[in-house]
Amino acid sequence: MTGRLVVVSNRVPSDGPPSGGLVVALHDCLHENGGVWYGTSGQINDAPSDGFSDVAGDGYDMRTFDLTQAEHDGYYLGYANSVLWPLCHRRADLMALSTGDFETYIAVNRRLAKMMARELRPDDQVWIHDYHFLPLAACLRELGVTATIGFFHHIPFPAVHDLLALPQHHIFPQWIASFDLVGLQTQRDVAAALEMYRSLVGAEQLRDGSLQYRGRNFEIRSFPIGIDVDAFAKEAGRRDGRALLNLATDERLVIGVDRLDYSKGLDNRLSAFGQYLEAREDGDPRASLLQIAPPTREAVTAYQNIRSEMERISGKVNGLHSDLDWTPIRYIHRGIPRDTLAALYRAADVGFVTPFADGMNLVAKEYVAAQSHEDPGVLILSQFAGAAEQMTSALIVNPYDIGEMAAALRTALSMPLAERRERHEALFKVVQRDDIGHWTDSYLAAMARIAHKPLVAEAV
Ligand code: ADP
Image (cartoon, rainbow, N blue to C red; front, side, top):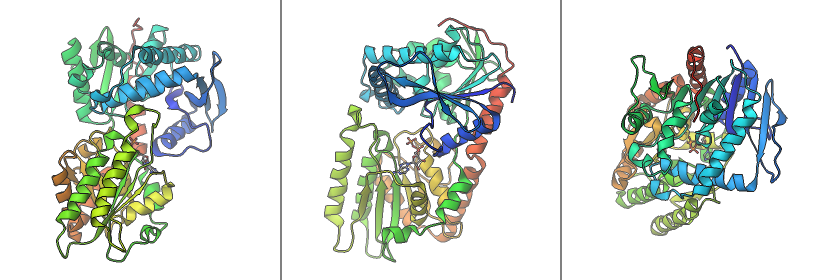
C-alpha cells in the first residue's frame, strides 16, 4: 500500500504479545506494512503529557496516551459505555445522559486529534476503530487533516428512532461524514445508516453508492468481521473438553460464552434452558448448560444487577431440576484460556448464542470453527446477532421468545447426524470464506481504492 497504515483503537496491545482475533489481525497488518498504532495506555494519570509515549511494537510504532481519572469516567465509562453502547444495542432506556460526560468525550477526541494531527502525513491511511472515536475524524478535519480516514463500527448502527433519544443526534451525521470509508458489520447496519442520512438530514446516495453530505463524499459499506478459523479449529482438537468437565457418557452439553452484558440475552437464555428441562419427556437426553460469562464494566451502573439476576435464574432452575449426580446449569463467571474454550466448544452438542443485539458475535463463528466435521454440534443463533445475516444454516431464533428457544434446544439435541453435517458444512464454508484475514484485506483494499479521491477539508 502507498502511505503508512495508521490504526487507532481505544486500547493498544502494549502489555505483552497481542491476543484475540481482531488485535492479532491489526497487529499482522501493521507488522506487514509498517505504520503506527495509537490508543490509550490503560494507565490513569492526572497530569498527562501533551504528547504520546512510545511502546515498542513488532515492526511498527505504538503511540499511547494516558487518560486522567475524570477523562476515564466521562469519556470511557460515561459517554462511550453508558450512552453509546446502550443506544447502539437498542437499549436507549439504559442511557445515562449527562452533559458533562458528552463534553469529556468530545474533549478526549479533540485532545487525541490535536496530538495526532502533528504527526499525520497527507498520504496516510488512517483506520479508526469503534464507538469511542466517532467524532475523531471530524476533529481531525477541523485541524486540516486531509489523509484518508476510515472507520469501523464494531457494534450495531442505531436505528433512527433510537438515535432520536440521544440529545446529540443531530451531530451524528456530521461525525460519520467526516470519514472517507465507514465500515459496518451487516447490510442491516448499512440500511440503518442510510436511513439516518435520508430521514434526518436529507442526504442522498450517489449513483456509485457513495454519499454526499456537506460537500464531502464518503462510503458506507458492510465488512462482516471474522475469526482466525484455522487457528481455532486446530486449537479445538488439542484437548478433550468432555473430560475437562467430567461429563457422564450419556450427558449432552449446551454451551454459552459471553461477557456478562445486558445485550447478550442471558436471562432469557437461562429461562429457555429451564423451560426445555421442564418439557423434557422420558427418553429425551439429559443435557447440561455450561454458561461462561465473566463480569465486565462493573463500574457502569447498568451492569451491576446482571450477575445477581443470572444467579437467581440458574439457582431456580438448578433447584427444580438437579439430581444427586447432576447439576443442569454450570455457571462460570470468569474468563478462561482460549485453548480450553476451544476444547469446550468442540465438546458441546449445541452452541447457544442468543443476544438481543450484537454487532457480529464472534462466539457463533468460534463455535462453528471448533466443531469436528464428522460429528458436528448445532448452532442456535439469535436473529439479532450480526452473524445471522451470513450464518443462515443455524437454527435461527427470536431471543425474546423463550418458548421458541426451548423448542430449538429440543430440535438441536435430537437433530439427526445427516442434518447436523449438512448445516455445519454450510456454516463452516461461510465462516472460513469470511475469516479475519478476508476482513482486513477487503477493508484495506476499499480504503486504498478511495484514497485517491479528492477530499474537501471542512470545519465542524
Ligand atoms: P463482544 O465483543 O460483545 O464481547 P463477541 O462474541 O463478538 O462479543 O466477542 C467475544 C470474544 O471474547 C470472543 O472471541 C470470545 O471467545 C471471547 N470471550 C467471551 N467470553 C469469554 C470467556 N469467558 N473466556 C474467554 N474468552 C471469552
